[in-house]
Structure formats: C-alpha cells, structure tokens
Amino acid sequence: MTYWDPIPTVRAIVGKPLPQWGPGRGPVRRDWSGPAGPSYHVWANRDWRSVPGPFYAVETDTCWTGRECAPTSVLYDDDGYGQEFVYRQPRTPREAYELICAGECEIYGAYGGDGDAHWTPGLVRDWWRDRYRVREWAVALDRTWSVSERADRREAAGGARAYVAHIDGELEGYLRGYLFRLQEGRTARPGETLPGL
Image 1: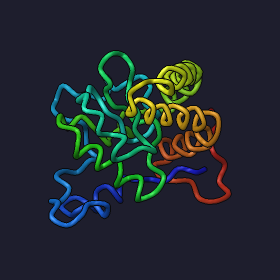
Image 2 (image 1 turned 30 degrees about the horizontal axis):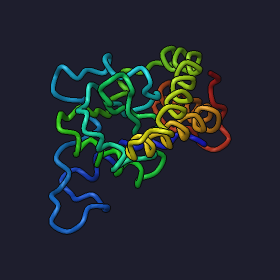
Image 3 (image 1 turned 180 degrees about the horizontal axis):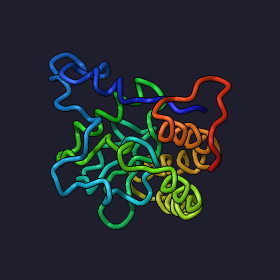
Image 4 (image 1 turned 90 degrees about the vertical axis):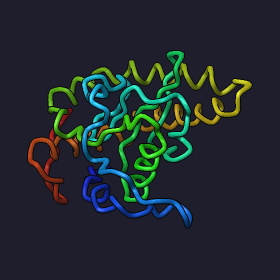
C-alpha cells in the first residue's frame, strides 16, 4: 500500500453534505484538515495508540459514535473512558468521508487533521519501533471485549483485530509512503524509492 493524501478530499467537502448522509442532513460544518478544537485538544495530547498520519483525536467524548461512522479508522480506548482514536488513516475518499462523519458526530470537535504539521520522520520511526506495545494492547483488548456481554464491545473487538492485522500487514508500506510525503512534500510516484523505517 502506498500513501494516499486525504487532505484535498477533506477540504473539498466543506459546506457540502457527506455522500453517506441522507436527505435533510446539513453540510459538513468545518474543515477537518485543521487542528482539533477547542484549544485544549492539542496534537501533543493525542492518544498514544493513534497511528501516524494527518488525522488524530484528542480527549473525545465517550459516546462511542466513532465506529458507527468510521469502523475502518476509529477504535476506543479501554482506560475507563472509551475515548476515540484513529487506528488507520483513510486510504480512499470514502474512508476520508467516514472519518469526517466521526468528527462531525463527536461533540467536542476533538478530531484534527493537521498531523502532517507535527509528525516528523523521527517521530514516525519512534512510533514504528514501539508498535509492539500498541499491538499487545489491541490483542488484549480483543481477548477481553470479544467475550463481553455488551454488543458494542464485541463489535469494537473487531476493530482491535483489524488494528493488529493493519500493524502486521500494510502499515509498514503506508508509513514508508507517509515518510516520503513528510520529507519531500508530495506523494511518491510509481517506482520511486521509499525511505526505510
């Protein structure tokens, strides 16, 4: 998998309804490529499980609406609060729209899309070196939530399994493409050598 830049898609939908929204639903309220808001939701406070990339969440509500909108991108912590974080960056316009929906449904506006301004190649490589901590957490979450009496936890356990599969599979290629984007300011062209992790 190579890196796909979701930011142009995100900016183009501002003021328009998301394709998955039915009639009568208003337009996208804000440009989700900017920082999380309000001001105390800063990138440095993002959840440690958040995968590198432009999107992140910081101290979200605990309503568990993120996976209803973006099951391929959002997961919940198990630290007693159930706050949302981004475990997979969008790879297609549809996935970008789903993540915008998660941001629109989250009552604090705690999603941001300016991660490119904060991630550095060194920070991405540090995260990748520490990925086993995240993987172990996701395996333990699946083990616990997959047998829960609560249907929402059993559903979220599927997200934990998807996160493990992402770490074990395409995430390395994605992050190498993302490193290229951070270093060169553009997406790699076919055949260009990607930096190592």
